[in-house]
Length: 313
Image 1 (cartoon, rainbow, N blue to C red):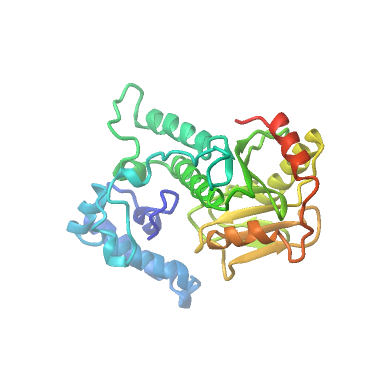
Image 2 (image 1 turned 60 degrees about the vertical axis):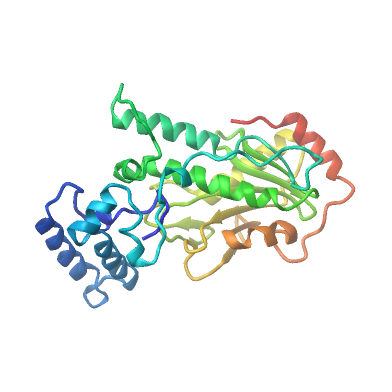
């Protein structure tokens, strides 16, 4: 089981309510084993997910620990659950001083997603309810997945921003940037490899690139992440008089099926790279495709246009 708040909870994997009795939970486990077994039309990934879920909530002691938000229940399946809400709580943004050895960074990565998460988790818990800790693991796990996705989105953006900040003084990063399309751009990066629009995501389930677009069970129906990022970058570029050299979508390392990176080489979404997070630094330095032309003389002009024209959400 992943420690991402976006991932399906053991109860969701087993297809049963958290309030179910232990006998109901056991019957659901056996049913899901039959349904997901590869010999009966399931997949090995789903079959193993059911087994992992059972290890977390299958006996009363571990189930009670999980429901309280303890990490001990999940240690038996080899993943580290948060031991407290601090791992999901907001962290300070990277420094934005030019004198630092860090990249120059502006904006508040993950800020919009966190703000929406805090609003919705309080509404879901009940108006007027005093939430001592909105990031309490037990509370977050019990919330609807669309609310948990907002927290996962914020964490993904913050993690990307920290990696981008470590690229060094040759890079400038803008976070949570407004676009004329209405879809914000999570990060804009200007560096030796060009001007790149970056989107950070964690849907909590594996995804794959198919015909130039990302697909997966956890991606909401009708959502087209690659197309939205490409359109946002192009419209923003035209409005500012600059050209983006590519788009990058960053996912957790385990989220991209059978690859650490996949590229869109044809069609309207060409010039987009979908990568595992561990490849982010190297891609920012090398560009979306091998042999990308390096910006030199116009970096100052592009940075000036962006500084004068960008707006944050």
